[in-house]
Amino acid sequence: MSKLLSAFFVAASAFAFAPSSLANGCNGGGGGGNNQLQCDAGGPYTVGAQAPFVTVQLDGRDSTNETGYAWTTTFPGALFDDAASGTPTLTIPVSNDCSFNVVVRLTVTNGNNSKSCHATVRVRDCTPPVITCPENAKVFCGSDTSPDALGRATATDNCDTDVKVTYKDTVTPGACAADRFDSVIRRRWKATDNDCNQSVCFQTIDVVKNVTKLDVRPGVCPNGYDPDACDLLPVAILGLDGFNVGNIQWNTVKLYGRNCDGGPVSAQCFTLADVAGPFFGGAECDCSAVGPDGKLDLVGYFKRSKLNQRLGLDDLPAGSVVSVVVTGRLCDGCKFVAEDCLLIL
Image (tube, rainbow, N blue to C red; front, side, top):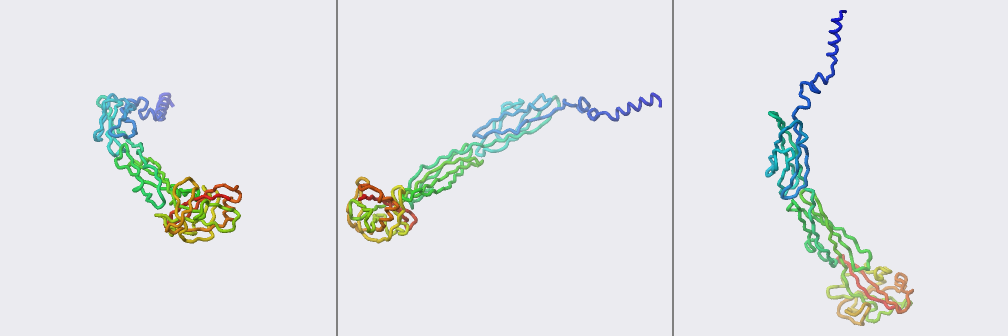
């Protein structure tokens, strides 16, 4: 083979196996390379909503080979401070609907060449409503505990003019059956705006038992208690104006020490009789020998051995004064309490 022919084959082979980067014009080839005009409007942008206006700075400087900028949007009322800047500030009006999207269009130019692109501005309401709870309350059992009676929470919002307010109750029974408190209602109020932002507050409602009068050893004052006596101890739940002992469920009546310090003790039996009238005034544990007052009383009779055992009465020195509480349930489901004292003999 001649030297001329060999040279031809070498040149042909070099052309056939040239790298593709040269073949497609990259790195300075015929395609234009890095001199090509590109548009980049940045984003997506996110901004917190706050009526009546919010602002966001846009940035189109990641575009390539641009020499001019032109920003536009069709969103009603939105304005650029300088639509020909690479970094203009866009002001957007905010109404009751605080979460929405705004589309902006950027056109970049270089001489007679131009390119356009888009970006999204996401306006989002992340501010929870401001909620105000009604005042705490204390009511008797059987009273209306609804929000209509005890008040409703109110709420305001930076965007929503009609905030949804709801509530849920958690009821906790009193820890001591002899306590005046029957239960505690913890009312959880929740405010939710139209972008699902939420705030909560709590209202405490103390439900107290009905309070009536108790007379240990009716007709006798002071209420002396002999732990060694054999007879049953009479304890009268007194009928009052507004408290009818005929509404008591007898099988629920129990006797306790104050603050549940001892007890419960159930009565051996009951009778309905007018045995005493209520005593008002005086210091704690004062008493009187007021006789029948024309209203029926419910008298329970308690074994002293059980009282001694469960309240520790036979271990106390003579002269000790002990408060005792009788509680039970009424036919309407509410509870009552009544309190009197014993003088240990």
